[in-house]
Length: 133
Image 1: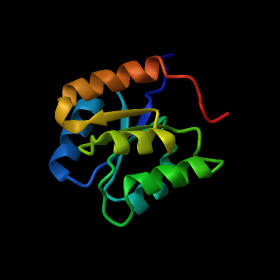
Image 2: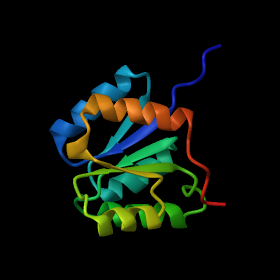
Image 3: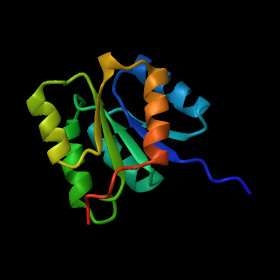
């Protein structure tokens, strides 16, 4: 019996990017759910229970840093892997994301959606050590 598709929650407020990332990741065999703001991201994380969240940082209602903080504070959600996928690429922003618990930090401008899908696939096959224990 084949392995169940890994579940990814994409949190992105740009409709064009959301559709591109969704299409590439679905094409790579992942089950996809989407959220367009920070509050919806937390709700969907509870409902969907993804294996990974691709999290934009600049979001309406609640920014990605706050979403990340709340995810990692919650005993039910804290083990979900999170990759920040954003254009905020200053050293301080990257450090803030990783210190709040992001497993990786991708700068959108540096990767095509196909490259993001490839890196996500590799990440889920070989995840980093769990830092939440």
